[in-house]
Image (cartoon, rainbow, N blue to C red; front, side, top):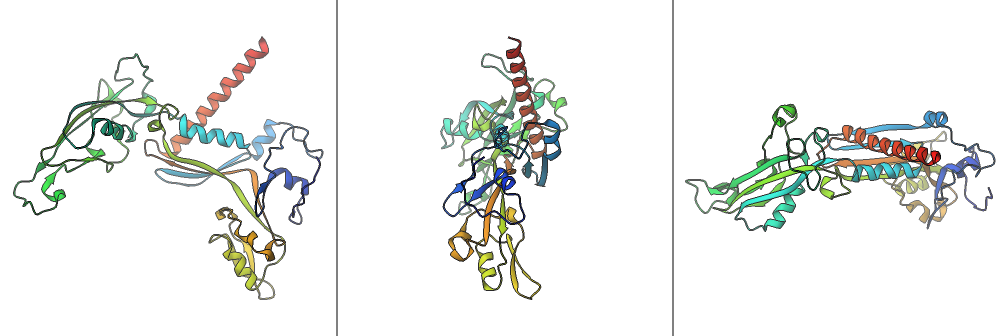
Length: 354
């Protein structure tokens, strides 16, 4: 492959390997972005697809996980695979969400349509695997529908003076998601006794009521995916970035080392004492770099550092809305990806038979 690009390749690395596996970050542009892993692109590299070889270099590393967020590294895959996983997390993992709202009584200042919309966006914690899909002409049953009730009335607490704040002299002045009550149908109480169906968070504000105002609402939740409506999406954010790399080409010492470190976010560059007792800049954690490229604004560092990104190393950050915790969410996402691959394989087999 012709090499017309003049780039500062770090010392002691294979030039072709570096160009094949990295995206280059320059002061005013990002280069070498085009995918070049097609068979025969590189003369000195055997890039034919080999599943066993791919398995040896593929890794999924979970860095941190909490109740509603996970950060993990997906290493050794093409960008198309990483983006497919991101889109599946957003739009194709099924959840349960409120679809039908039957308002029997609403004397609050909030219009019925707005109230119904707010209710639909409240994430529900339910075992979606125990429910089937409900078609547009299917009747609601305990196998495809969750019934929820919201019945509250704002009343004055006896004996409280009018001078007190409303929150202290009125009951149900603020209506929260915890006021939504699950009404089990059929065998649902038994099926979901270990994990009762409820809103993912109990402090979501639905509306406010004044004295004498009330709500009496019945809701039906059904199974769906984010591709149909955003309320079914199990994640608030699902994004990835390519692993940043910082290659120091020559020693950076003294005051220049401190200026160099200040050009990066905290924790990326550390200052250490070298053998001569001088302050010297070293890469501490390139992962924390936001690739702002501020360092390349200083002419004295243009020949001292090379910024790049590892083409097949993706750092994922996923934050759920609470309807599904990260661990089962990732399992479901990979299962959807697996089913897509099996469907594609079957289609190709049928095509070959024809």
